[in-house]
Image 1 (cartoon, helix red, strand yellow):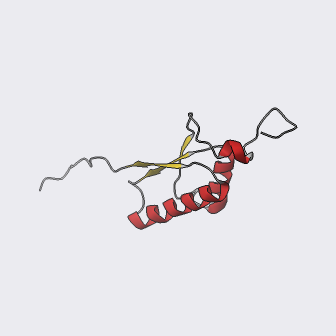
Image 2 (spheres, helix red, strand yellow):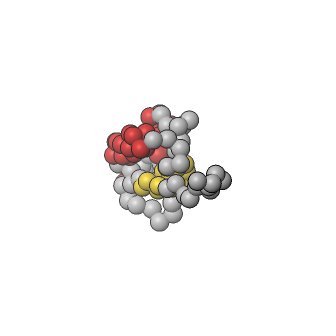
Image 3 (cartoon, rainbow, N blue to C red):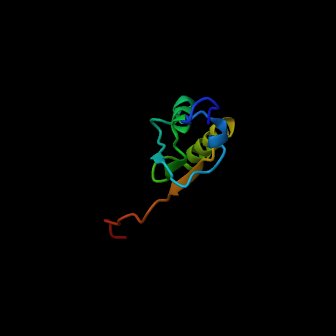
Length: 95
């Protein structure tokens, strides 16, 4: 909190260094997977990134996770990663 203001902002570092009980979750996909977007959503208060493993390669997701961790560390934010694994794939072809 700012000493002269009773309201805190997303950039107040003491507040950002504590984990929150309420989680703000959003999916990070290929379209918004850029450094500026990751920074913006962390500053806005998002603290859980969801990755859908049905789309993209393992290498893509590994690189995405490294970007998330690097940006979270830069802001001193507690940021979790929620992984949505591939579910069962319907089989329509007889073998």
